[in-house]
Length: 423
Image (cartoon, rainbow, N blue to C red; front, side, top):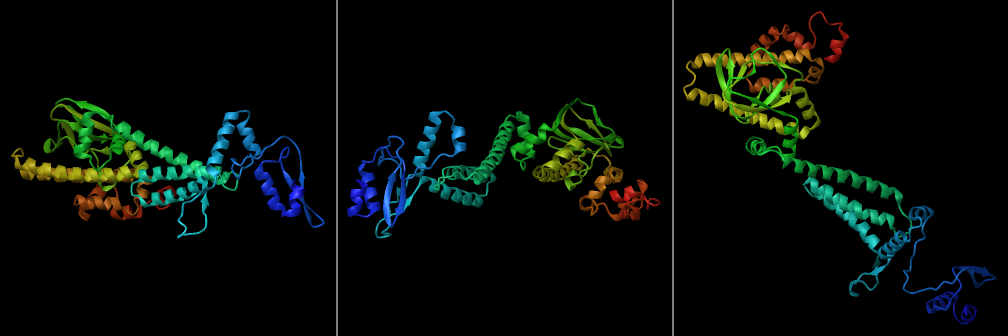
Protein backbone atom coordinates (compact mmCIF):
# COMPACT_ATOMS: atom_id res chain seq x y z
CA UNK A 1 0.00 0.00 0.00
CA UNK A 2 2.77 2.39 0.92
CA UNK A 3 4.70 1.65 -2.26
CA UNK A 4 1.61 2.23 -4.41
CA UNK A 5 0.84 5.45 -2.61
CA UNK A 6 4.42 6.67 -2.86
CA UNK A 7 4.26 6.44 -6.65
CA UNK A 8 1.49 9.05 -6.84
CA UNK A 9 2.17 11.25 -3.85
CA UNK A 10 5.00 12.23 -1.55
CA UNK A 11 6.18 9.70 0.99
CA UNK A 12 5.20 11.60 4.17
CA UNK A 13 1.66 12.15 2.87
CA UNK A 14 1.33 8.46 1.97
CA UNK A 15 2.52 7.34 5.38
CA UNK A 16 0.31 9.79 7.26
CA UNK A 17 -2.83 8.82 5.32
CA UNK A 18 -2.12 5.14 5.72
CA UNK A 19 -1.52 5.42 9.46
CA UNK A 20 -4.60 7.62 9.90
CA UNK A 21 -6.73 5.04 8.09
CA UNK A 22 -5.62 2.42 10.61
CA UNK A 23 -4.58 -0.13 7.95
CA UNK A 24 -1.08 -0.87 9.29
CA UNK A 25 -0.77 -4.09 11.27
CA UNK A 26 2.04 -6.17 12.70
CA UNK A 27 4.30 -3.10 12.92
CA UNK A 28 5.83 -1.28 15.84
CA UNK A 29 8.31 1.16 14.34
CA UNK A 30 9.20 2.75 11.00
CA UNK A 31 12.74 3.02 9.75
CA UNK A 32 13.35 5.48 6.95
CA UNK A 33 16.25 4.85 4.66
CA UNK A 34 17.53 6.59 1.60
CA UNK A 35 18.46 4.25 -1.24
CA UNK A 36 19.76 6.00 -4.36
CA UNK A 37 17.71 9.10 -3.64
CA UNK A 38 14.36 7.20 -3.34
CA UNK A 39 12.63 7.02 0.06
CA UNK A 40 11.69 3.54 1.22
CA UNK A 41 9.73 2.37 4.21
CA UNK A 42 10.74 -0.78 6.08
CA UNK A 43 8.55 -2.43 8.68
CA UNK A 44 9.97 -4.37 11.59
CA UNK A 45 7.27 -6.79 12.62
CA UNK A 46 7.05 -7.71 16.29
CA UNK A 47 3.58 -7.86 17.60
CA UNK A 48 0.14 -6.82 16.57
CA UNK A 49 -0.15 -3.08 17.15
CA UNK A 50 -2.96 -0.81 16.08
CA UNK A 51 -2.57 2.95 15.85
CA UNK A 52 -5.52 4.69 17.44
CA UNK A 53 -6.25 8.33 16.80
CA UNK A 54 -7.47 8.72 20.41
CA UNK A 55 -3.94 8.29 21.77
CA UNK A 56 -2.00 11.43 22.64
CA UNK A 57 0.40 12.70 19.96
CA UNK A 58 3.24 12.40 22.46
CA UNK A 59 3.96 9.51 24.78
CA UNK A 60 7.19 9.67 26.75
CA UNK A 61 9.13 6.47 27.24
CA UNK A 62 9.55 5.20 30.80
CA UNK A 63 13.13 5.13 31.95
CA UNK A 64 14.68 2.07 33.53
CA UNK A 65 14.67 3.77 36.94
CA UNK A 66 10.96 4.50 36.68
CA UNK A 67 10.29 0.86 35.72
CA UNK A 68 12.17 -0.30 38.80
CA UNK A 69 10.16 2.06 40.99
CA UNK A 70 6.87 0.97 39.48
CA UNK A 71 7.80 -2.70 39.76
CA UNK A 72 4.98 -5.12 39.12
CA UNK A 73 2.21 -2.79 40.29
CA UNK A 74 0.01 -2.26 37.21
CA UNK A 75 -2.29 0.24 38.94
CA UNK A 76 0.57 2.54 39.82
CA UNK A 77 1.92 2.56 36.29
CA UNK A 78 -1.58 3.00 34.89
CA UNK A 79 -2.23 6.02 37.10
CA UNK A 80 1.11 7.59 36.21
CA UNK A 81 0.50 7.11 32.50
CA UNK A 82 -3.00 8.56 32.76
CA UNK A 83 -1.68 11.56 34.67
CA UNK A 84 1.13 12.02 32.14
CA UNK A 85 -1.39 11.91 29.29
CA UNK A 86 -3.65 14.39 31.09
CA UNK A 87 -0.83 16.90 31.78
CA UNK A 88 0.99 16.61 28.46
CA UNK A 89 -1.97 16.60 26.07
CA UNK A 90 -1.87 19.83 24.02
CA UNK A 91 -4.85 22.10 24.47
CA UNK A 92 -5.76 24.89 22.08
CA UNK A 93 -6.30 28.29 23.63
CA UNK A 94 -9.58 29.92 22.51
CA UNK A 95 -8.02 33.12 21.21
CA UNK A 96 -10.16 35.15 18.76
CA UNK A 97 -8.79 35.28 15.24
CA UNK A 98 -8.85 39.07 15.23
CA UNK A 99 -6.25 38.95 18.00
CA UNK A 100 -4.08 36.20 16.53
CA UNK A 101 -4.79 34.05 13.45
CA UNK A 102 -2.47 31.33 14.74
CA UNK A 103 -3.60 28.43 16.87
CA UNK A 104 -1.74 28.51 20.18
CA UNK A 105 -1.53 25.29 22.17
CA UNK A 106 -0.39 24.71 25.73
CA UNK A 107 -0.18 21.74 28.11
CA UNK A 108 -1.22 21.63 31.74
CA UNK A 109 2.37 20.85 32.64
CA UNK A 110 3.43 24.19 31.16
CA UNK A 111 0.58 25.85 33.06
CA UNK A 112 2.04 24.39 36.28
CA UNK A 113 5.47 25.81 35.41
CA UNK A 114 4.09 29.30 34.79
CA UNK A 115 1.89 29.11 37.91
CA UNK A 116 4.90 28.24 40.06
CA UNK A 117 6.80 31.39 39.13
CA UNK A 118 3.66 33.51 39.49
CA UNK A 119 3.06 32.17 43.01
CA UNK A 120 6.67 32.79 44.01
CA UNK A 121 6.35 36.39 42.79
CA UNK A 122 3.15 36.82 44.82
CA UNK A 123 4.85 35.42 47.94
CA UNK A 124 7.48 38.13 47.71
CA UNK A 125 4.75 40.79 47.71
CA UNK A 126 2.92 39.75 50.91
CA UNK A 127 3.80 41.12 54.36
CA UNK A 128 2.76 38.22 56.57
CA UNK A 129 5.48 35.58 56.83
CA UNK A 130 2.94 32.76 57.22
CA UNK A 131 1.23 33.72 53.97
CA UNK A 132 4.66 33.92 52.32
CA UNK A 133 5.55 30.37 53.40
CA UNK A 134 2.19 28.89 52.40
CA UNK A 135 2.27 30.52 48.97
CA UNK A 136 5.86 29.34 48.55
CA UNK A 137 4.78 25.77 49.35
CA UNK A 138 2.02 26.00 46.74
CA UNK A 139 4.45 27.34 44.14
CA UNK A 140 7.01 24.61 44.83
CA UNK A 141 4.30 21.94 44.71
CA UNK A 142 3.11 22.82 41.22
CA UNK A 143 6.75 23.04 40.16
CA UNK A 144 7.09 19.39 41.17
CA UNK A 145 4.44 18.49 38.59
CA UNK A 146 6.21 20.52 35.91
CA UNK A 147 9.64 18.99 36.58
CA UNK A 148 8.34 15.40 36.83
CA UNK A 149 6.00 15.57 33.82
CA UNK A 150 8.19 17.82 31.73
CA UNK A 151 7.08 18.52 28.13
CA UNK A 152 10.42 17.20 26.83
CA UNK A 153 9.60 13.78 28.27
CA UNK A 154 12.39 13.46 30.85
CA UNK A 155 12.14 14.02 34.59
CA UNK A 156 14.22 17.01 35.73
CA UNK A 157 15.51 15.49 38.95
CA UNK A 158 17.74 18.38 40.02
CA UNK A 159 14.97 21.03 40.39
CA UNK A 160 12.56 18.31 41.55
CA UNK A 161 14.72 17.42 44.57
CA UNK A 162 15.47 21.05 45.46
CA UNK A 163 11.79 21.99 45.37
CA UNK A 164 10.95 18.96 47.52
CA UNK A 165 13.51 20.20 50.06
CA UNK A 166 12.00 23.71 50.02
CA UNK A 167 8.55 22.24 50.60
CA UNK A 168 9.81 20.20 53.55
CA UNK A 169 11.50 23.21 55.19
CA UNK A 170 8.53 25.53 54.77
CA UNK A 171 6.06 22.83 55.82
CA UNK A 172 8.07 22.26 59.02
CA UNK A 173 8.05 25.97 59.84
CA UNK A 174 4.33 26.27 59.13
CA UNK A 175 3.57 23.22 61.27
CA UNK A 176 5.71 24.58 64.11
CA UNK A 177 3.84 27.90 64.09
CA UNK A 178 0.45 26.18 64.20
CA UNK A 179 1.66 23.86 66.98
CA UNK A 180 2.91 26.84 69.03
CA UNK A 181 -0.42 28.61 68.55
CA UNK A 182 -2.26 25.49 69.63
CA UNK A 183 -0.26 25.10 72.85
CA UNK A 184 -0.54 28.85 73.54
CA UNK A 185 -4.32 28.46 73.65
CA UNK A 186 -3.93 25.73 76.30
CA UNK A 187 -2.43 28.10 78.92
CA UNK A 188 -4.34 28.53 82.20
CA UNK A 189 -6.84 31.41 82.28
CA UNK A 190 -4.78 33.44 84.77
CA UNK A 191 -1.77 33.28 82.44
CA UNK A 192 -3.88 34.42 79.49
CA UNK A 193 -5.07 37.33 81.65
CA UNK A 194 -1.46 38.24 82.51
CA UNK A 195 -0.62 38.23 78.82
CA UNK A 196 -3.63 40.38 77.87
CA UNK A 197 -2.97 42.92 80.65
CA UNK A 198 0.82 43.18 80.74
CA UNK A 199 2.43 41.20 77.89
CA UNK A 200 0.27 42.31 74.98
CA UNK A 201 3.36 43.21 72.93
CA UNK A 202 4.22 39.48 72.85
CA UNK A 203 2.27 37.24 70.52
CA UNK A 204 0.67 34.21 72.25
CA UNK A 205 3.26 31.63 71.05
CA UNK A 206 6.18 33.75 72.32
CA UNK A 207 4.44 34.32 75.67
CA UNK A 208 3.72 30.58 75.99
CA UNK A 209 7.40 29.82 75.32
CA UNK A 210 8.36 32.27 78.08
CA UNK A 211 5.86 30.77 80.53
CA UNK A 212 6.99 27.19 79.86
CA UNK A 213 10.53 28.15 80.91
CA UNK A 214 9.33 29.23 84.39
CA UNK A 215 7.97 27.47 87.44
CA UNK A 216 5.22 28.52 89.84
CA UNK A 217 6.08 29.59 93.41
CA UNK A 218 3.59 30.14 96.24
CA UNK A 219 4.24 32.42 99.23
CA UNK A 220 2.04 33.03 102.24
CA UNK A 221 1.83 36.29 104.12
CA UNK A 222 5.15 37.09 105.82
CA UNK A 223 7.32 34.75 103.73
CA UNK A 224 10.71 36.11 102.71
CA UNK A 225 11.25 35.91 98.96
CA UNK A 226 14.83 37.19 99.07
CA UNK A 227 17.02 38.81 101.73
CA UNK A 228 19.08 41.96 101.32
CA UNK A 229 22.76 41.23 100.64
CA UNK A 230 22.23 37.61 99.56
CA UNK A 231 23.01 36.21 96.12
CA UNK A 232 19.93 35.76 93.94
CA UNK A 233 19.91 33.68 90.75
CA UNK A 234 16.21 34.08 89.95
CA UNK A 235 14.02 36.49 88.00
CA UNK A 236 10.41 36.53 89.18
CA UNK A 237 7.05 37.84 88.01
CA UNK A 238 4.11 38.47 90.35
CA UNK A 239 1.07 36.51 89.12
CA UNK A 240 -1.29 37.57 91.94
CA UNK A 241 -0.89 39.06 95.40
CA UNK A 242 1.53 41.75 96.61
CA UNK A 243 5.18 41.87 97.68
CA UNK A 244 6.71 44.68 99.74
CA UNK A 245 10.30 45.81 99.04
CA UNK A 246 12.41 46.83 102.05
CA UNK A 247 15.74 48.63 102.21
CA UNK A 248 17.17 48.39 105.74
CA UNK A 249 13.62 47.53 106.92
CA UNK A 250 12.28 50.69 105.29
CA UNK A 251 9.52 50.05 102.68
CA UNK A 252 10.49 51.57 99.35
CA UNK A 253 7.77 50.30 97.01
CA UNK A 254 5.21 47.53 96.48
CA UNK A 255 5.18 44.91 93.72
CA UNK A 256 1.78 43.98 92.32
CA UNK A 257 0.40 41.71 89.61
CA UNK A 258 2.53 41.89 86.46
CA UNK A 259 5.59 43.43 88.15
CA UNK A 260 9.01 41.83 87.68
CA UNK A 261 11.24 41.06 90.65
CA UNK A 262 15.08 41.17 90.52
CA UNK A 263 15.29 41.79 86.77
CA UNK A 264 18.55 43.77 87.38
CA UNK A 265 19.22 45.55 84.11
CA UNK A 266 17.30 43.30 81.71
CA UNK A 267 15.28 46.31 80.55
CA UNK A 268 18.53 47.98 79.44
CA UNK A 269 19.84 44.89 77.65
CA UNK A 270 22.15 43.66 80.43
CA UNK A 271 21.98 39.86 80.25
CA UNK A 272 23.92 39.19 83.44
CA UNK A 273 24.78 35.51 83.94
CA UNK A 274 24.86 33.67 87.24
CA UNK A 275 23.75 35.24 90.53
CA UNK A 276 23.44 38.92 91.44
CA UNK A 277 23.58 40.32 94.96
CA UNK A 278 20.18 41.55 96.14
CA UNK A 279 20.00 45.23 97.05
CA UNK A 280 16.84 44.84 99.17
CA UNK A 281 14.63 42.39 101.03
CA UNK A 282 11.33 41.28 99.53
CA UNK A 283 8.53 39.94 101.74
CA UNK A 284 5.07 38.66 100.85
CA UNK A 285 2.46 41.17 101.99
CA UNK A 286 -0.29 38.60 101.40
CA UNK A 287 -0.67 35.19 99.81
CA UNK A 288 1.21 35.57 96.55
CA UNK A 289 2.05 33.47 93.52
CA UNK A 290 5.04 34.20 91.32
CA UNK A 291 6.69 32.80 88.20
CA UNK A 292 10.35 31.97 88.77
CA UNK A 293 12.95 31.85 85.98
CA UNK A 294 16.50 30.69 86.54
CA UNK A 295 18.61 33.60 85.33
CA UNK A 296 20.98 31.48 83.23
CA UNK A 297 18.11 29.58 81.57
CA UNK A 298 16.25 32.82 80.85
CA UNK A 299 19.37 34.45 79.38
CA UNK A 300 19.95 31.40 77.20
CA UNK A 301 16.35 31.55 75.95
CA UNK A 302 16.65 35.27 75.14
CA UNK A 303 19.93 34.73 73.29
CA UNK A 304 18.32 32.03 71.13
CA UNK A 305 15.14 33.96 70.39
CA UNK A 306 15.96 37.53 69.35
CA UNK A 307 12.30 38.40 68.72
CA UNK A 308 11.32 37.36 72.24
CA UNK A 309 14.28 39.31 73.61
CA UNK A 310 13.21 42.56 71.93
CA UNK A 311 9.59 42.13 73.01
CA UNK A 312 10.55 41.35 76.61
CA UNK A 313 12.71 44.48 76.77
CA UNK A 314 9.64 46.51 75.82
CA UNK A 315 7.61 44.80 78.57
CA UNK A 316 10.35 45.43 81.13
CA UNK A 317 10.60 49.10 80.15
CA UNK A 318 6.88 49.53 80.75
CA UNK A 319 7.30 47.67 84.07
CA UNK A 320 9.87 50.27 85.18
CA UNK A 321 7.36 53.03 84.42
CA UNK A 322 4.68 51.22 86.45
CA UNK A 323 7.04 50.90 89.42
CA UNK A 324 7.86 54.62 89.31
CA UNK A 325 4.15 55.46 89.24
CA UNK A 326 3.61 53.09 92.18
CA UNK A 327 6.28 54.88 94.20
CA UNK A 328 4.59 58.22 93.59
CA UNK A 329 1.24 56.78 94.67
CA UNK A 330 2.92 55.32 97.77
CA UNK A 331 4.17 58.78 98.74
CA UNK A 332 0.78 60.37 98.07
CA UNK A 333 -1.06 57.76 100.17
CA UNK A 334 0.63 58.89 103.40
CA UNK A 335 2.10 55.46 104.19
CA UNK A 336 5.62 56.92 104.14
CA UNK A 337 6.10 58.84 107.38
CA UNK A 338 9.49 60.39 106.54
CA UNK A 339 9.82 61.17 102.81
CA UNK A 340 13.43 62.33 103.18
CA UNK A 341 14.53 59.07 104.78
CA UNK A 342 12.54 57.16 102.13
CA UNK A 343 14.34 59.06 99.37
CA UNK A 344 17.72 58.34 101.00
CA UNK A 345 16.93 54.62 101.18
CA UNK A 346 15.82 54.63 97.55
CA UNK A 347 19.11 56.21 96.49
CA UNK A 348 21.09 53.69 98.54
CA UNK A 349 19.12 50.90 96.92
CA UNK A 350 19.85 52.20 93.40
CA UNK A 351 23.57 52.58 94.20
CA UNK A 352 23.75 49.09 95.71
CA UNK A 353 22.00 47.62 92.65
CA UNK A 354 24.52 49.28 90.33
CA UNK A 355 27.42 47.95 92.43
CA UNK A 356 25.93 44.45 92.14
CA UNK A 357 25.77 44.82 88.36
CA UNK A 358 29.41 45.92 88.13
CA UNK A 359 30.53 43.12 90.45
CA UNK A 360 28.74 40.59 88.24
CA UNK A 361 30.40 42.04 85.12
CA UNK A 362 33.86 41.96 86.70
CA UNK A 363 33.37 38.34 87.80
CA UNK A 364 32.39 37.23 84.27
CA UNK A 365 35.10 38.46 81.87
CA UNK A 366 33.64 36.50 78.94
CA UNK A 367 30.40 38.44 79.12
CA UNK A 368 32.33 41.61 79.88
CA UNK A 369 34.20 41.10 76.61
CA UNK A 370 30.89 41.26 74.74
CA UNK A 371 30.19 44.59 76.42
CA UNK A 372 33.45 46.22 75.38
CA UNK A 373 31.59 49.19 73.91
CA UNK A 374 29.38 49.04 77.07
CA UNK A 375 26.31 50.33 75.25
CA UNK A 376 23.94 48.46 77.56
CA UNK A 377 25.77 49.62 80.68
CA UNK A 378 25.74 53.24 79.50
CA UNK A 379 22.03 52.93 78.73
CA UNK A 380 21.40 51.65 82.26
CA UNK A 381 23.34 54.58 83.73
CA UNK A 382 21.26 57.05 81.73
CA UNK A 383 17.95 55.48 82.77
CA UNK A 384 18.83 55.36 86.47
CA UNK A 385 20.84 58.62 86.63
CA UNK A 386 24.18 57.02 87.55
CA UNK A 387 26.69 59.85 87.09
CA UNK A 388 30.48 59.55 86.95
CA UNK A 389 30.87 60.12 90.70
CA UNK A 390 28.54 57.25 91.61
CA UNK A 391 30.16 55.11 88.89
CA UNK A 392 33.59 55.70 90.43
CA UNK A 393 32.27 54.95 93.93
CA UNK A 394 30.72 51.69 92.72
CA UNK A 395 34.00 50.62 91.09
CA UNK A 396 35.90 51.52 94.24
CA UNK A 397 33.60 49.31 96.32
CA UNK A 398 34.47 46.45 93.91
CA UNK A 399 38.22 47.12 94.27
CA UNK A 400 38.69 48.61 90.79
CA UNK A 401 39.58 52.04 89.50
CA UNK A 402 38.08 53.82 86.53
CA UNK A 403 41.35 53.46 84.59
CA UNK A 404 41.50 49.71 85.25
CA UNK A 405 37.87 49.33 84.20
CA UNK A 406 38.54 51.18 80.94
CA UNK A 407 41.69 49.10 80.31
CA UNK A 408 39.95 45.85 81.10
CA UNK A 409 42.39 44.49 83.68
CA UNK A 410 43.60 45.41 87.17
CA UNK A 411 46.92 47.01 87.95
CA UNK A 412 49.68 44.40 88.14
CA UNK A 413 47.98 42.06 85.63
CA UNK A 414 49.41 43.60 82.46
CA UNK A 415 51.07 40.31 81.50
CA UNK A 416 48.03 38.23 82.34
CA UNK A 417 47.33 36.84 78.88
CA UNK A 418 43.99 35.34 79.85
CA UNK A 419 42.70 38.64 81.23
CA UNK A 420 43.81 40.51 78.11
CA UNK A 421 42.22 37.90 75.88
CA UNK A 422 38.93 37.95 77.80
CA UNK A 423 38.76 41.71 77.68
